[in-house]
Length: 134
Image 1 (spheres, rainbow, N blue to C red):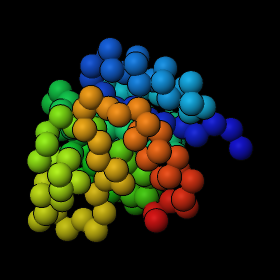
Image 2 (cartoon, one colour; image 1 turned 120 degrees about the vertical axis):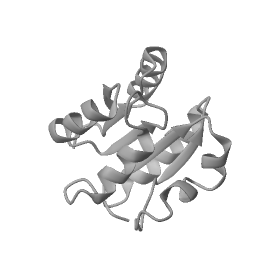
Image 3 (tube, rainbow, N blue to C red; image 1 turned 135 degrees about the vertical axis):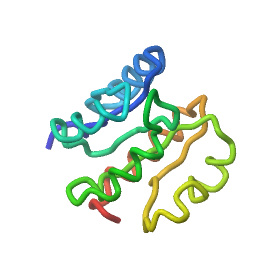
Image 4 (cartoon, one colour; image 1 turned 180 degrees about the vertical axis):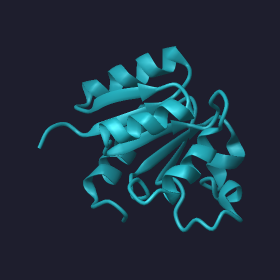
């Protein structure tokens, strides 16, 4: 089995370059999308082992994209790491946002920006080593 495939959904090109190189240095294959609409196309094409998703994106938010992914039969079990600078989202792992949307599962990890590299690798290692949907 080859390297784990990560879809990085982030609109800041500096963060894409920084995290992309960092993740590749740790053995992941990284593709990126800079908005929700291109992320949906990339999900189809790449079939990633995990998605690293920024909350603030142009147009539709990353949390709206998370809801779309969780409701989609094919993608609902893809592990998702949410990145945010919003302390309220970090504190409750995004549950406040997802309340009322009838979702059983939100993000697998919620990490604050600036991203703690060790926490990101630990989270990705954990969520990509488990069978999907757990």
